[in-house]
Amino acid sequence: MNDSETKPKTTSAKRRTRSGGRAANTARRGGELFKQSPWRIPVNQDPPIEPLPEEGVEAIHDGAMKILENIGIEFLNEEAQELLPKQDAELKAAMSEWTGNG
Image (tube, rainbow, N blue to C red; front, side, top):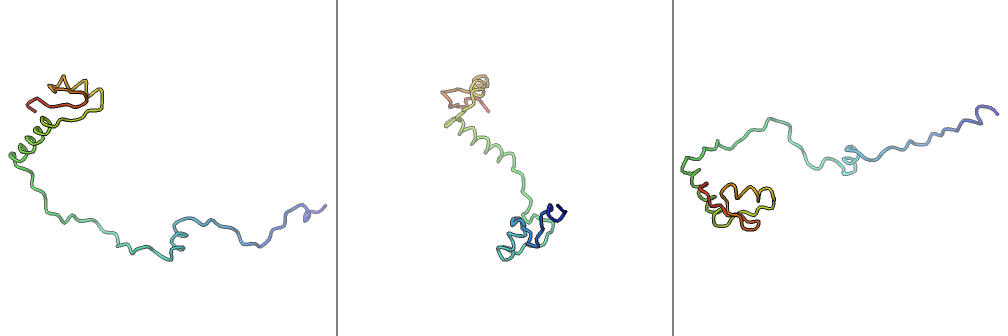
């Protein structure tokens, strides 16, 4: 037996390649989906926001306290349900109504 009989013959068949990847997807689509703008540092074009005056903060707090007193909050966490009565909150089932001076 000689060496030519034991070695597999190689053919000049085209090597199979993978068909995935970004370049393949772009080629299948026929080009880019949209033209991307060149990179630049983003600039915020909105004017700066003025902080609320003390009266505005108080109005928001008062509104939140009215919601807590009239509607309450549903607490599903058992640990929270145990802590609320210790914090001057009235607990009815899983609903809590705030009775404190918040």
